[in-house]
Amino acid sequence: MPKTILVVDDDEEIVKLITKSLRYEQFAIISACSGKEALSALEENHIDFIVLDIVMPDMDGLDVCRSIRNSYNVPILFLSARDKDIDKIVGLEIGADDYMTKPFSIQELVSRIKAHFRKVDRLFKEWDELSPSNEKADAPLILNDKTFEAFLNSRRLDLSTKEFQILSILMRHPNHVLTREQIYENVWGDEYGEINTVTVHIKNIRKKLGSEYDFIKTIWGIGYKYTEREQ
Image (cartoon, rainbow, N blue to C red; front, side, top):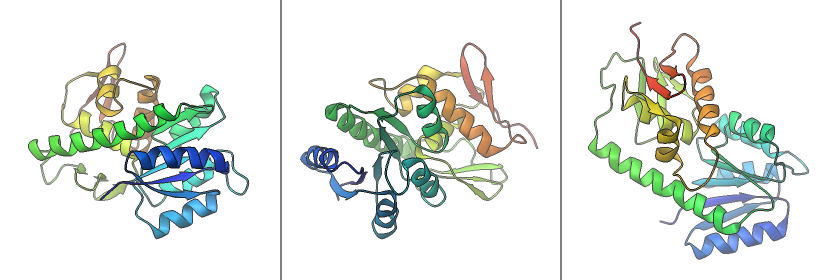
């Protein structure tokens, strides 16, 4: 079954360009020209990935992303004319997995999407071969590798796909320091993007875990490590 991508943009020409390029790569495409249409499409279809514009007339992409994150864990790539660093940071902090600015390279966009699915496929293969780092039934933090769900004391955490992947990588190397570069390479690949996005996603994970569970330690000047302290 081909992966289904939801393309959301009020510019019809951009939607046509992205749709044509992704269909050539054998993806199934559903398009929407507004935030409300996007949310309706998500309710009615199984979506594997979302390309989402920010500036739209009825409901901007940031609000759409917030709404999606209340119920879905589908990966989101913002495609926006807003190119300031603060816009990228805000987009990532509210739950986006990636961010590209307009004007954009259609080849780069397609490559990023394909790289995402390659990463997911590779992680599934690795998870089939490796046992979880926290198999203990009484462990406070449990990851479900098949559904990309995380549970803290039986409470489901609302993690984005990239946040889940980062947490999984850290947990599979307990007490072992991983550099930001190592984390980025394992989650995003080393072709595109900014290394600071790792810092933003770590910040989001910590916020969702809560201050009581400071499992992720910062090793200044080096990177991060996962340490499950005794409760």
